[in-house]
Length: 327
Image (tube, rainbow, N blue to C red; front, side):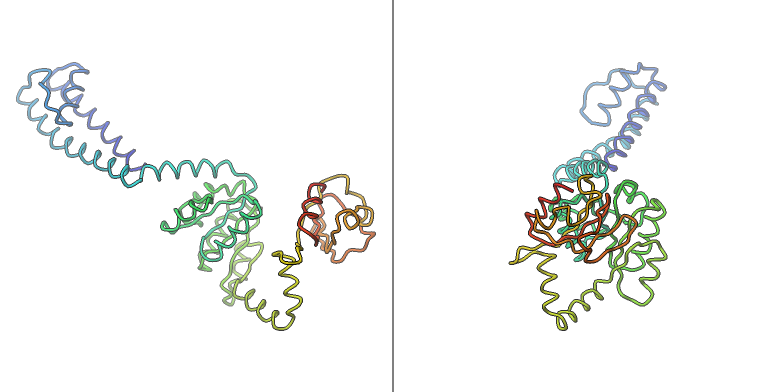
């Protein structure tokens, strides 16, 4: 689109140059001069609208050399874009940017490698709004084909982050392959939006986590450390790990471990026993996180529920959905 726009501007300049040239050299009218310019650079071969003198013919030769080649170039590029789908892709990118501009309280995923792909899949399964920033042009179409919103560019670029809606986003997840790139992304995002939640991927190298936290990351995770810990725990505590897998990912027991924020005044001020969460919904409240950050594990039946508390519950999927409608 940029190339076509520039070509259009240059075409208008050539038309203006030819028109005013004939008006000055041959003292012709504006419409006659414009007509003469168009039939000259398009080589349609119509008769001259006014007789040309020596200066007019020299000017026409100059106009042909400059204008005809340019017009042929523009038409070839337009044909190339249409045949190769370039125009369609450009329109698609414009529509994508408009859709991204309408997002609110969404997540920005920087990087669509192996980790980013899994993150996007889980976010999609849980109906979370998100947009992907990816610099590899070969991945862009594949991401769009999956139905994800995507912007092409460097995630550390302020313009790209603003186009992704960093000023309205709920959080940013940086999962690019380089720690240095992750630091730049974190610094850029924190500079634009000081209060945004930033989760960063670390390679696990010594000092990487410290640098990312200094750059402004709220949470730093190393897939290698998590993977190694998980494998070791599977050997040491296999039953515990199997149960956690069933609770987090679902399985033959049909259990889910889910969190939900209390917003309903019907639950506010009630104790766990009086809330009916266990009796009516057959759910276990594993933990309660207060609004100020305090975490209460295995709360007793007399614990009072407050508005904006986050409940971590364990139970069946349908029962969890029923409670979500109430909170």
